Length: 99
Image (cartoon, rainbow, N blue to C red; front, side, top):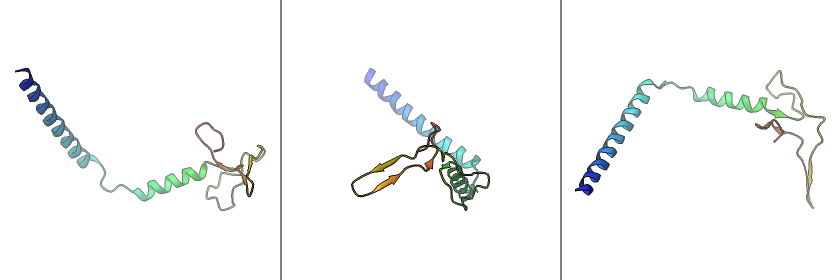
């Protein structure tokens, strides 16, 4: 008897969750803007990344109020047997340190 009741409860829970999921999808479809501008979102994201740059910036960096920054910091250089990498530039991270 308990097994039949448990099976019935499980089937009812699955049916209810399916119905609620379908209802949520219908509500999202009705109220979500259909003409979302993905191009603008991508452009805003790219602009945000350009504002996070540190080091010596090119003259065409696209952000008029952003200038060179953290130039007095000691440049970290990693040398291998064949090449040398200068890590003085990069992007700011959440910790407010150059990446």
